[in-house]
Length: 119
Image 1 (tube, one colour):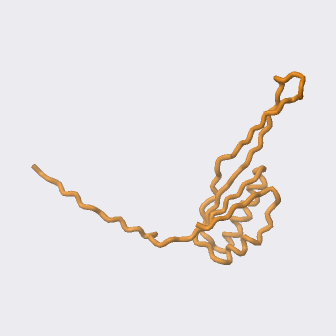
Image 2: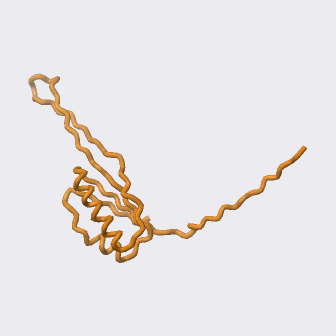
Image 3: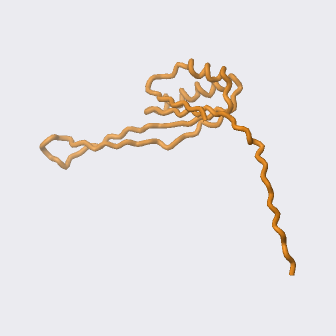
């Protein structure tokens, strides 16, 4: 009988050191405004030679509301309305202070919400 011996292999991580990330989550009701603002953010980051991950499209959040058409006549007649919130995600790997400063000075259109986190 032949016996086999199992050897444990140790996996060395080349990326063992922690790299900081700037995670930008952008959301808006209109997808055209969202795409324009994402383009501004990406152009600004690329101008300073940043390493980007994204833009990653996140699922569209749909909020539906059902309302009676009339207050006391024909209660079964209803209307449905919906609001769509489009979202994108961008990661900037190891951002420099120049990149952070240039991103804070961007003029983005109203109606675009931005959440910035350092990871």
